[in-house]
Amino acid sequence: MTNISRRKFIFTTTTAAAASIVAHGCSSNSNTSSTSSDAPSAATAANISTVANAPKVETTKAKLGFIALTDSAPLIIAKEKGLFAKYGMTDVEVIKQKSWPVTRDNLKIGSGGGGIDGAHILSPMPYLMTINDKVPMYLLARLNTNGQAISVANKFKELSVNLESKGLKEAASQAKANKKSLKFGITFPGGTHDLWMRYWLAAGGINPDQDVVLEPVPPPQMVANMKVNTIDSFCVGEPWNAQLVNQKLGYSALVTGELWKDHPEKAFAMRQDWVDKNPNAAQALLMAILEAQQWCDRPENKEEMCKICADRKYFNVAASDILERSKGNIDFGDGRTQQDFPYRMKFWENNASYPYKSHDVWFLTEEIRWGYLPKDLKVQEIVNQVNKEDLWKQAAKAIGVPDSEIPQSTSRGIETFFDGVKFDPEKPQEYLQNLKIKKV
Image 1 (spheres, rainbow, N blue to C red):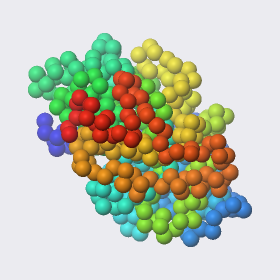
Image 2: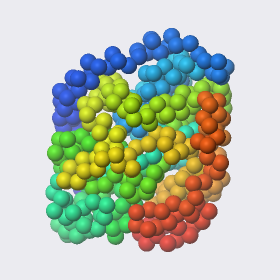
Image 3: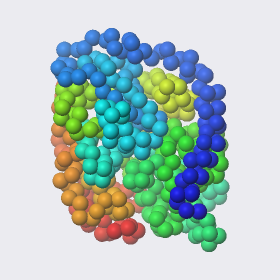
């Protein structure tokens, strides 16, 4: 099957299977819709008085996109808890996007053209947009670390596929011999889920570009595609891995924090022209999002966060699909369980919000590894252009974050992955040269 026909098949089969997600979401979400009144309404939020340290904003309006993933919670909470309004941004819209390509396209046209000004976004996307789409972006904050998973169909349980992917190597070879391919769902080419999947497969000796097929699938459609056997595995954020397990359609081979402890994941990014035109408004948005991240990380707020996000206008799923993994309680679906897992999603703890430039150097190095960006890319130059960690620090100080919680270096230092490979952000070429499976 060609890539074009396969993608068409994914789209059509997803449409046919979508009813399963809708039915599941509606039937099991009845309790969350009834509790959604616990969250402040938009009208209530808009009536909250601004605080003394609110910037004198150039505009009170901003349109921000999000995908139905748990790591979008800081934007949703900043809206529902009135934090945007608290800092003078009384007319912020938080708008659901259907997929990452839709998010990209709406950022490209901006709110003036009917799109959006900023978004909850995959961390590499602002770079891909700046370089490939010629739409300059600013990365203003990391929204979370950890919190994703690679899930596989139940048929792979007998192969003991978990943190090690090598159990799939023979299955991939057998599928190719039968003129078929194992298909792995990723959310966006060059996005974080694509990179986690590629790293995991390559570490097990599987070439993701030759031995299997990687298929872009919107996050909310992953479970439906697994149900109709369009894909054999996927990498995505929550709540979709937990929902797969809850529906007994597959299991989580691993959570991505096991691949790379406290790895960077989503980001808050905005169009460069919007930030440059509205620097105070951008700071106000950042102040609200950082405060929301602190709120989301408090254990006592987890249930309320999940109820708010589960609502029909946001995720349209059962709050139970979100809650346990948000707490770090992981049911992998194959008999393994973990309580208070250290690799849970973090919004603020351990500097989760700070956008380390060293992490963006890794992302760009991996984009080069897999041929998404040219090998002669001036990595540090583009990181300095896109990553606005200075604005993060400014916003953090404005809301009273203590110096002890503000990193003093833009590098987190040498990173170590699950397979023992180390990445020194000062020597990205050395890392790249030592990788066995790559396109470069």
